Image 1 (cartoon, helix red, strand yellow):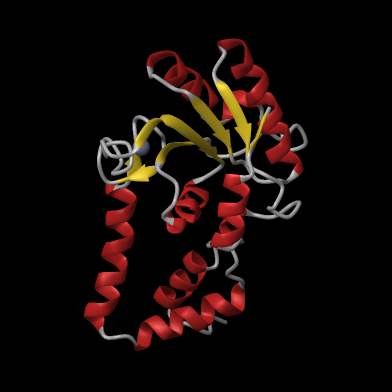
Image 2: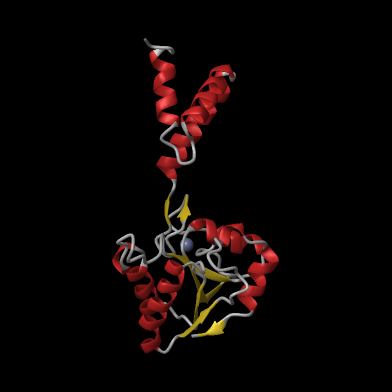
Length: 199
Ligand code: ZN
């Protein structure tokens, strides 16, 4: 026997595909949506569709952006000779929130993980190496997470860059082991950046 209308069941099913949303949460959200004013539901749906359609990767640093070049890459006041390498756009946002970093970024979209079968070709590493060949770069700051994958990635990148003669640094271990950058407070992030060591 069907408990719900086909449309509500369909909505519950779609919602339960989202990360962290189990069957119960999906039901709760579905009924909440049913009780929302129709125009608010419309806005929610269209902001999801629009974000999915319009957002793309910056052609330079690979962060998520609305333009061909993100606001950081197109800002002449930023120090384009300093590139901070992060695992994802959320980590970039964490450093931007400190308001103290003046360089630019490179977003890898992942980290090397032999256990999960993620190799150097699965992250945006080739794109970083291309930037180092075509741009005037004086320092690469590796700010991957201090997890096993983050450390593996940092070592791999530093070995790749070393022969080019470009200075490679790693953020200090003020960041707790296994800690995700996005959850760490700004003071700790700044301390990690200021205490970075050359590899
Ligand atoms: Zn960019």
